[in-house]
Length: 471
Ligand SMILES: [Zn+2]
Image (cartoon, rainbow, N blue to C red; front, side):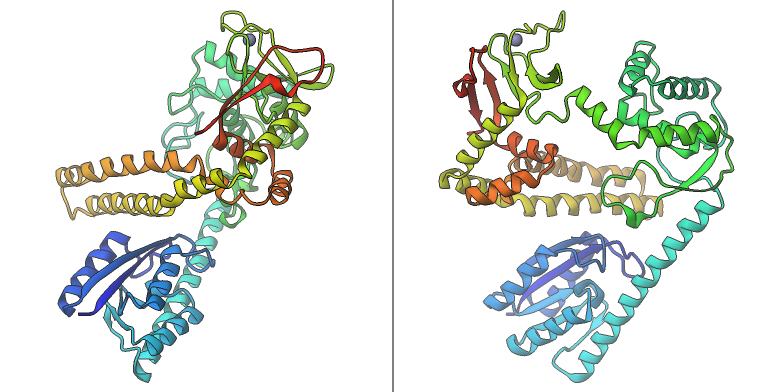
């Protein structure tokens, strides 16, 4: 009996056969059964950027299983799910020749053993590639055109200051925006404005308290000055940049003047200001919050004295902190780095980290597959293919599994920054120096629970530091 590998791929090119991975798998399983084969394994890849060349772990696993001889056939939904480029298709054809692999697709029979079958596969692959490229180009153009027309855009939460139609101004909120703009332009910090808003119980559209980051985005958005901003998708990966390009006057009215908006945008996007802001809140301090006061146990924060960066037990009335311990930040950072790298240099710890993180990829795949499944269910409900009751019933077990897997993934992800970090002492030192503070913090957080700092002695004393390692 032929052992069939089911290969599924989620991608953004939802044209035509853009199906969720669950649907692809179900259809493929049915095909395997019709053929009288047996399922060897399912290989799901999440590949949101169809032709970007991002890695496909399941695909790599499939190729190595074929080489190892544990798979005799590949089943997929359509040829365009299987390969992303003509070169990859040639790899498959080559494998079919050498290993006698059969290929079956839900959308039609393709015999890679014959010249005609190969021609068809190549044509289908080329057509899919053309369509995806064409579609990406079209979408980019549409977003740009819509932005230039000053149209209302976006789903989700309404923007602060405007009603759900995204056009009508909410007077009370508009006043808050004008006040915040005035205060920040006058030199007040975002943190200070947010603190005041919290006291007055002024909240975001989502009902949360204002954070400096959310207030910064609000004040820097061209929207509140009645202008339309466009940020090309290609210009960012995960975090949307603060400023886009202002492309048009919008259809909605302004709350602040374009002049004030331009000043705010320049001010809030100034990297020097950013640095000062972070320094003030201790974010540039590698170990703030990780160090604990040896007298009272309170978290220590970064705070300079006479321009010298230090970690201190904060003396905040009512917080239970004693204010009695401080240490030089620079020396402490170097000392802790050395302790950390020495510990990570031990083969036993490195071994444990590799072992712990082994299931990372697999879990991430499961989570993504379930998210896709939920999305499909929602789509099915929206298209009235299922009732609301059926939708809810189907969701429950997926939600449960998803939550469990997410929790497991979160606990594994804690050690994952270490995977690419550990190496020889010299390698780790080089990597460490190339990292920014937040990346270094991730390494520290993956390695230690906390570091207790004993009260000061007259000289620099490394024995003041007691490290509580993550087992
Ligand atoms: Zn203390």
